[in-house]
Amino acid sequence: MPNSQNHVLYSYETVQKLQASVRRLEHELRQPATTLMPASFSSHHSHVDQRMENFSAEKSSEMPRGSARVSGNQASQIPSIPGDNLPTIETLAEEVGSLAIGQQSSQQYIGSASGSSFCRIFFHQLNLVAEDNICDLGTNLRFSDPFSTHASLPPKKIGLLLLSTYIVRLHMWRPIFNLKELRSWFQQAYSSPKTLDAFRRFSVFLVLALGSYEAEQTATCRPTMNIREPAEYFAAGMTFYDEISSIGSLQSLQSALLLAMWFTKVSKFANNSYLWQISRFAMSLAIELGCHRNNPRWEISSSERELRNRIWWCTYDLERNIAVSTGRVLSIRNQAIDAPFPKATDDDLLTESERKISPTFAARGFSPAIHMFRLRNISGDILESIYIARPRAGHHPPIQDTAVVADSIRERLARWHSALGEYTLPESQESLEMRVELCLAIILLNRPSPSFPSPTEPAVDACVDACQTAIETWKFLMGRSALAISWKSFHDVFVTGLVWFYCACNLSTIDQSSVEMIGTTCTEVLDYIDRKTRKCGKHIQFFRQIQAMTLSRRQSQHLPSMQRANSDPDFDPLGFDWMDGCFNEIFTGAGDNLLLDFTMNEEMFQIPDRL
Image (tube, rainbow, N blue to C red; front, side, top):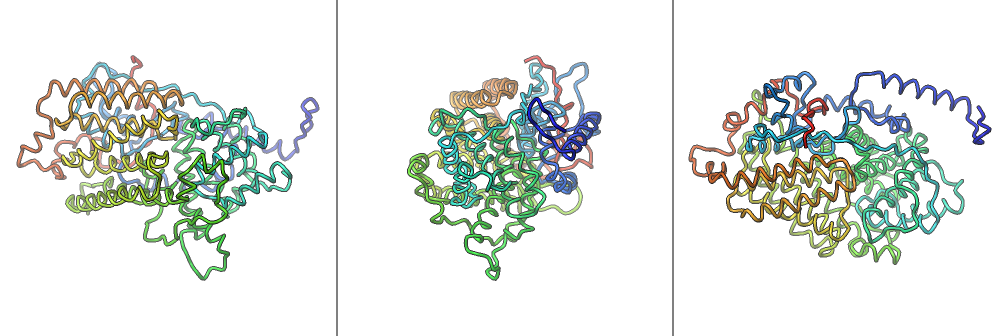
C-alpha cells in the first residue's frame, strides 16, 4: 500500500496488523473504565503482553504481605460523613499511603501499599477526618505519548557521552551487559549499523534513553548538544522489541531488565499495572534459565557464567525493590539462590573521562551494587515478616516471635551500615544514595505497621533519626544538583515526612523548632520533585496541612499517646488484642473477605477540589 507523498511503502501484512490493532483499541475504549496500560505501550508490547498473561492472574491470586485490597463493592461500603463530601480516614490513607496519581483510566501507583497501614494509624491519631479543610488530592496527570517522535542516532560524540553516562550511573548498579560488548555495539552502530541485530539495536537506543535521562538529572554530565528527548530514544528502541520478546533467552531477559530500568527511572511513565508484571516476568524468565543457580558442571564459558550471575542479581535487585515498594509478594526465597555476586573484570575498565565522573566506580567497581543487593535481601525480609497478614482465625505467628525477628533485622541493618564505608567513597553521590536507602529500610521496619501498630519508644526514636537523616540527605543532594528522581521518589519523601510528623506527635523530646525545620525541608524537596514531574502539587498542599495540624497538636496536647502508653502498666504496645481494640474498625471494617492488597479505584479518592 504505497504512500507516494511521504515515500512510504507498507506491506499488506503490516496494514492488516495495524487495522487489527485499531479494532482492538476501539474495543478496549468501549469497555468500562478500568486501570489500563497506555495504548502506546500496549501496541508495542503485543508479545510481552501474551507472555505476561499468567502474571496478571497472579496479581489477583497471590496476595502480598502487608497491605489491604479494597474491591469495588467494599469501596462503596466505606462510610462517609453525612451531609458532607469530606474524606474518611480510610480513603485518605489509601490514597496517601499508596500515592495513586492520575485519572481512572491511567492510574499510577507509585508508592507502597504497606504505607496505607501507617497512614491509617497516623491519620486516626490526628482525627484527620474531622478537619473540614482537608480537600481532595486528585491531580491532573500530564501524560505525554512517548511514541509521538522517534529519535535517530545522535552525533557520535553525543552518543558516546550518553553511553559513558549510562555506564557510570546505571551499569555500576545493574551490570546487565558485558561492557566490552556494549562499547563495540555502539561503534558498530556508527560504522556499520546493518550488522546489528534487533536486540543490539534495541539495547543501543535504550542505553541512549537511560543515559540521556540520567544526564538531564545531574549537572555534572549533562550534554549540551543533545537535542533529543529521552522518550524519543526509548520510542525508537521499542520498534525492535517485538523481534526479541518472543524468545526465552538471556537477550529477552536483558531486554526486560532495560524496560524495567526505564520505567523505574522515568517516573512519569511508571505504572504499577505493568512495572510489577515486568519484574515478575523477568524473575520467572531468570529462574527458567537457571540464572539463580551456580552449577559447576554446566559447560559454559567463564564470561557467560559471569554474565548470568550479573543478570541474576540485577533481576533480584529489581524484583525486591518493586515488591517492597508496592507491597507485593516475593518471587523466590533466598535459600534457593546460590549464584555468586558479580565480579569486576578487565572488560569493565573505565575511560579517563568516566573515571572522573564516577570515582566510586573507578575505585570500588561493583562493590556498591553488591552491598545494595544485601540491603534488598533485608528489605524483602521486612516485607515478609513485619507486613504479614495477621488473620483472626487460624494459625499466625505470636507477636513475640515477630518482635524477635524484628530485632534480628535491626542487627542486620546495623551491620550493613557499619560496612558501608568499605563499599563507597566518603560523601560521594553513591554513598549518599545508599544512606537514603538504609534510612528507608529503617523507617519501613520501625514505623507503625500491621504487626506493630503502636511501636515502642526505641522504634520511634529510630524513625526520628532515619527520617531526619534521609530528609537532610535529599536536601544536600538537591543542593548539589545530584538528586536523581525515580518512579517512587515523591512517595519516599512524602511518607518519610509523614513518619516524621508521627514521631513529633508521639515524642515530646523533639523540640518544636526541629519539627518545623525538618518539615519545611521535606516540603522543599517535594517542591523540587514536583517541578520536575509536575503532577503532585495538591499532595504537597495536603502535606503542608498535615504539618500545620502536627504543630498545632503539639502545642495543645501535653500528654501524647506514647507517654500514656508508657505510664499505663496494663498497656501492651505489642499486643494483638490491644490492636484489635483500637483499630478494629480500621483494619476489619471491610469485612472478613478483605484481601491483603487493594485495587486502585479513582472513585475512592474524589474529595472536593477546594485546595
